[in-house]
Length: 107
Length: 390
Image (tube, rainbow over all chains, first blue to last red; front, side, top):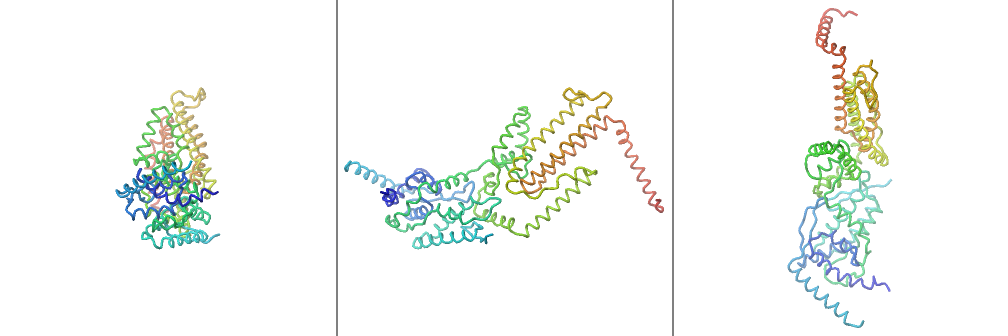
């Protein structure tokens, strides 16, 4: 019955994809990302996001630069690397294929 | 009463009570354990601590500098459980990220909002309410320039701009926390600065030594003020009795005083303008608003009487304003004292000038003053030479 729980693994798997999409659109810092996701089904928290971003950076998909903020300590602004852009393109393709498959099977 | 511990989160110092400390410690321990295999463990931990620090800061203000257990519980809930992401394995701890959709949202909103430079009223060094001060800080220009522009605009718009000022006074918030002060100036509010600020606040609000010192200084300042007033401006001491500062007010008192202060400022300014207009009207037409002084009363007497009446009305107002200022900010502003002193001086000079012009007796007295003083000195000098004559 509980769809929320049933789809939890799928959402978790897709989080990386969504984060890459958001970062591809413009440079963001973690609070931006959280805010963007907060209104969606993919709402997440610092506890999840920091380790995820750290891994994406280690894999060379994203990189960050420190930027001074108007009120507060400097922040890490993330952006996609060339490798990250390639990865995102593949993920987008894959996602389209899955959607097509779902559309074609059954009703 | 609660025992308080000082903790450090990525270079930010915080006071937390024991329950809060326990929860934070547990959360960070769990996070560290989860990240044990993560090559970027140190960096992620620093990021998490920084995020916690920013969330905790929102609970603190000028009258609250200790974080409670309930607040930490809220922050920990917002942060969410830390999951290892060392491998890209999506099956690990699958359900955990479902979290609470929408839960962390409000906190993120305010983080984003505080990132920008904001227009605040700044009380420190304000003349009326701090609007000009805040605008100067916002644009990074000299406050005198802003004030000159405001006065010019008021004159050009025949007073309409004063209404705009009053509107701004009520609409623009006051900068209260150190974070807001930084935002008012658009300063980079770095971790280093925060740390210093936290240390300073700690010393200011919790150390008995500082309190003692503060009290001593306040006493000195008050005594100096009294002396200054009695001995210099008001030998009669009529103003000296005005407004011994009330004890520091509580939060409600501060709010009331904060509302009252600008109102009293406006009333004072309106009365001042009315007084000047009345004096001018008396000087040029011999009457005020259709009322004319009896013909046998000389004009200068009417003006002096008016000045006395003005002084009488202004005295309680002035005292109330001082009291409100003290209650709102907890200190005596030198600007305030200096500006009211200047105004008093101007009134005195005005009265003297009028008396000089319209009262022959005063004129004669002033003209004979150098001679009289010379005589007096000579007599005193002679008097001191022989044995004193009683």
